[in-house]
Image (cartoon, rainbow, N blue to C red; front, side):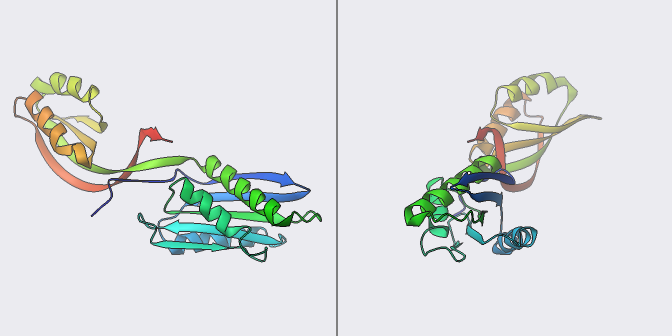
Length: 214
């Protein structure tokens, strides 16, 4: 069964924190495959080869099908796992986070490392932004000019997104609806158009809605 929605990152984010003279640089971004996550990690490593550690965690798949993490030389359980735990607590999927550490000469201890990597991961995630992706249907719709005002009025009151409105021999527009609401909305619009609206289903995919940013 396809999930109606999932939570992921809006885009690339980067932030850093200094703890006991060590720099912890957190970076995070959405990744739709393990290959994308590994490419992201390679890019970070190549850009900061002088860093002592590049610890990471990523979750791929709407149902957390792939979970990976690495402490990259830090004591076991002090970096990658805390980062993964933070991402799971936010219910994030299809994303990757990496924390690069430049050692400052002061040992932080197990507890200190856990807190530092968790915080660096947290600020990277917040910098990237968290969004809920909704299963969305896209339809191409067309109505006669005579009913456009009535249809437009209904569209303004509905939880939809309208794109690419064109005024040709008739008024055509692209309609995005949450898939779970599609049939009800199309029926209401058809009623508003006095049964004159023509609809062509184009695709179904995940998209985030402006009011769903977390």
